[in-house]
Length: 337
Image (cartoon, rainbow, N blue to C red; front, side):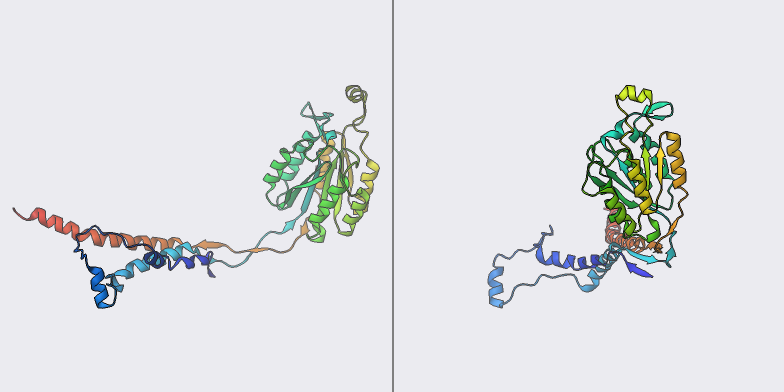
């Protein structure tokens, strides 16, 4: 099917005539007879002197070139037959806790101590990269919840935004209910079987406007399944001596399990990077959801043809104006003095 991508460009068609009418006549530079009493002659004749314009045959090549240029600028293209796009996949929203407690360096990664958020970035980044065919979005939450990346097939950008997340960017508290509520708002327009939220936190709800269990009931009513990952090392003598308290003691597993159960999801406990990797493998077993069918047409650009034709006609006009001059100069050189 033929179509013009930018049909509004045809509004520029009368532009040369408008410019000729609006702009003053330019001096040609050729010798001319100037009549000082032209105004008196026009008054006697009762009309203004007409400016001789080229005839339509002389203007026709330039008109054709301008039509070709406008046609090329309108982006003519040929659309092929509709082709189905692969639509099997999931809509995954990832909600990551960036509160102050996620800065505790009680996790291990490749033999080094790292903070909880750094470990999440390492392992969840790989999880995002492997979601081929899925739409992935990112929520960061602390005292408030923010949609950092809407659902998109651009997994690399989502991973980049996760890598750039810093502790305290959304406040130092933990608003679990607000994060779930924001996810429900973003997922409720999606097909019922693909409404999935994966929430990663290390604490208990101590901020926000929405109670976590109320948000869980709203998620269940909207068909949003919430999987929760509780992250943080178990209490040990080394962690107690280093921090002076148990950094994993704030994890409210009772509420987190209740949220997952209410929405039909699962609760996972990740004390080490091995357990967090195992959680990612488990989540990878989610069944793909059949989304709304999508189609696309392959567009073949055709603007090069009228553009090349206009360029060819321009060359011919230049050659026609230069060729007689070259012949005259050649004749003068060949004439004996």
